[in-house]
Image (cartoon, rainbow over all chains, first blue to last red):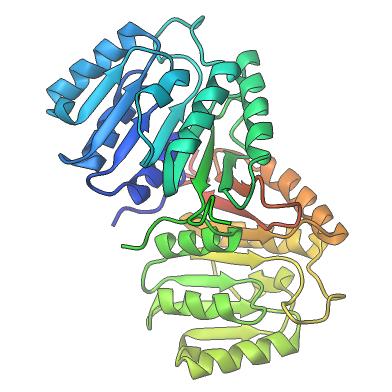
Length: 195
Length: 195
């Protein structure tokens, strides 16, 4: 067994994905970026599962498609070069997980970054599509103006979710500097909507 | 495998204890209280391990001793009816874990609560005694004046720890109401002190 070691928010999210996903699940990667998460999710859902990925940038989608192809995982994935605020048009209810990694594309154009206006729509849509005990994870990157703003808006939005519907966990590293990513986990209650 | 389900900060802490502890470890329960954590820790360290427990209240120590005895776990534990600020007098360096559950004793005298002045001494001492990759977990209870104050002081103290020495994770539930407990994990870096 590997020694327990705290690392960044990205690892906290990945650890939750491993605990949550079962073979055959359908999951959403709302920000495919360079495709690292997409590949990891495709491994976890297994050959009977499905990963539905979104990225506004054609570049990101091409790179991710190539990475999945090389790993032999493309057949269990579908990729859409559209903004994730449209995800409800492509995804049916009953997903186990939706993954958001906010900010800009690593190595990409820094003028293209996620914005709260679209992030809010996408997160709201994903929450609606979750099956009971399914979850949305969000990694947010404060430390620059747009990231700070997006994180603040996200916190306000998540804090207002009804506890009967969702459990909202916020994880951050207190002594890691102002730019360190933070991880949010929003899990649908087993009994959500049954009142 | 059990379904992944977020519950309270107490469960987050217990989950980390399970991931961190190896058979034969020495761990500290700095606030034995009713002895629930003490028993769980004693199970995890196994027959070759050691749990060293502290509580200022004789009542708590007696109850915990009885609980351990009934579970057949007393021989791997030692209990001290002294304040945890003295723990360095009873514990040698090289512990894997120290557990703090702040606030008052469940079902006990609400005038007896942990206070930052002694908590700070105890947490500082425990951090010194950790082996590399060992951790201190702290469950804090805001929502009443003394708990708010203690949590605020704890946050300031932990935020100032050097990242070369410790990784400090803060976990809280955003929509759970102002009195919900929060969980802090302070892990000693593998290379702490080697510069």
